[in-house]
Amino acid sequence: MQLSSILTRFSEPETLKMAKLGRELRAKGIDVIDLSLGEPDFDTPQHIKDAAKKAIDDNWSHYTPVAGYADLREAIVTKFKRDNNLDYKPENIVTSTGAKQSLANAILALVDEGEEVIIPTPYWVTYSELVKIAKGKVVEVHTTLESGFKITPAQLEAAITPKSKVFLFSSPCNPSGAVYSKEELKALADVFKKHPDIFIISDEIYEYINFVGKHESIAQFGELKDRIIIVNGLSKGFAMTGWRLGYIAAAPEIAKACEKLQGQFTSGTNSITQKAAVVALTADLKPSFEMVEEFTRRRKRTMELVKAIPGIKCFEPEGAFYIFPDVSSYYGKSDGTTTITNSADFSMYLLNTAHVSSVMGDAFGDGKCVRFSFANSMQNIEKAWGRIKDALAKLK
Image (cartoon, rainbow, N blue to C red; front, side):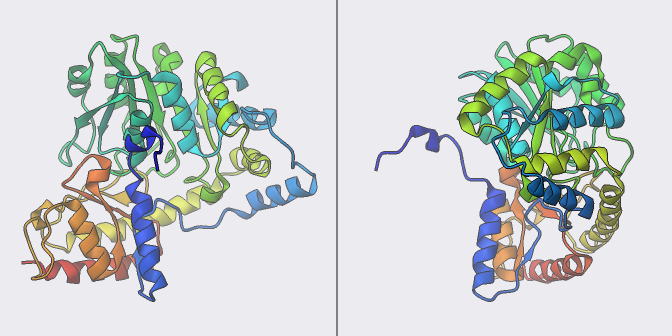
């Protein structure tokens, strides 16, 4: 069967693959603890669910405008002013079926064949694959645990070539948990000012899950604003993963380009979700901050448990809900049956031996590390890391 060559350009997300393997083991009756998926284990707040129910009763059940309902785009504009002190208009906003579609729209709207997209490692698994779908070239800039997993201005400058088209990053970062400060973003912005043909895609989906202070957006540096595409959504900060609502803020020309693409792919996103999103974005954020308080407690406990395991080096995340430890000291070791040679082996060993799912670091552009989520109950976190410690103790 001859299928399209587009399928050979990119890989299945390792995050979804590991979740699938975990489900398969669970179906066999094995107690698998999932530390692989990036999903809050909280329910959507009640006031948001109530808004969705009302939207159903009010018969918001018809096709929606491609870019989103007017009141939702106004709500997003209000959110940007309230939370980020950024001035946008509805014409700058396009809502989509999740932030992943927002990213796809932006990359397909900007990147032509052979053009380069600079991505600091580690990065979310889908970034590189979307660039490949667009026939762009991924240029990885490697960061380290010691540098806090952040790119420096000198590294950025060195990566720029005449073919550079986009810089793509996230803060807070999935998978590392790195959060760029205002000063660090300004230093990067100063480099971009010297290169006016480069666009910046800033993924800010973990905005509210910040353990070190106020979220800072690179869009605050006015000279760059028309070249910046902010990607955000409701999945992480509002525990609305299944509702599928993402959005961008961008210059009108870019927003219109994304709207044109989306018009052929999915048209407008879910009507009920949009009405619920208006309430989520404009109501009290207390439920979101309570969720972050719990993530803060889990982060603290996770770090305590990880530090008790010899041979693992771990950066304390500043945002999001992952740790991304360096586990390379275990490479070359064996339990007599399985030998660990890379991060994929490490993750599969933990899945099959400890029955804990994680995601191999190669998927994020860093083969020394493995991603673990702490978006799970404290009880499961403690049980999982107890199993991991026991499994790793068998490796010699």
